[in-house]
Length: 268
Image 1 (cartoon, helix red, strand yellow):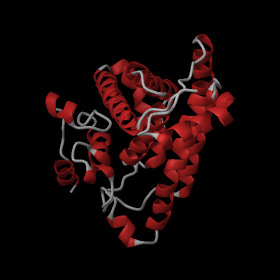
Image 2 (cartoon, rainbow, N blue to C red):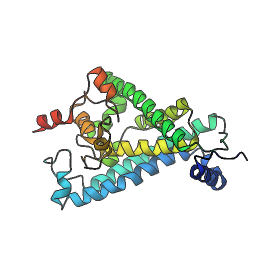
Image 3 (cartoon, helix red, strand yellow):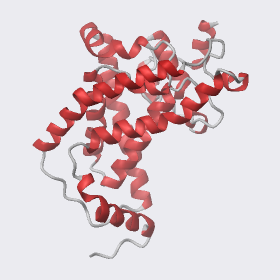
Image 4 (cartoon, helix red, strand yellow):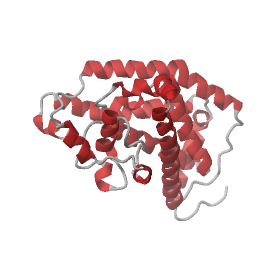
């Protein structure tokens, strides 16, 4: 085997361990949909705990984007949403992605892991590509009435979204979101390890966007280029602003950006 690059010994060891013990899993046609669903559910659990605490703790309710909008979603609402998302994955997303995987040639995995720098660059590039593709598709779904009615309207049943609702969408929209993410990593041509990190971070950003909390440690407070939950909640309330999922540059360029402060003033 080729010697791993000296700057990434930890990643090389991790990559070799993954290949040695999980090669069959990596080649499974069910991996993309299963990974997307399981990571989404697991990343939602902290916000499930916050919503449960919010029913009894005023401090937690004060972190909500719309602090005066009433109590957080109930456990029953979480359960109903979970069953809807699960049923759509089992009935549509899993079979469709498995068929797509079967039509494609089996992956040939590289021997070497990416360096830490390469991983970071590839993940960031994937996020930028996904953000761009999603912005285009999202604007189209809002501007074309047929697309909105058939594909996107179900997601907007949540005027005040919560974490699990990030994937409470029609089967076509869930499938298109997964294909957009897979296409982004394919266009960048990134390493499988970078791709796994991208999908994980992509899921976290989607969950955080829909969580309904403006937390002091949220990513959009650390990185001003991100819109975060306040911006996305404005989109769910107003429908014609803040189309980009994560970054704000496309909405700023096309005049569709709405600062959260303006939305909150309208709410009041």
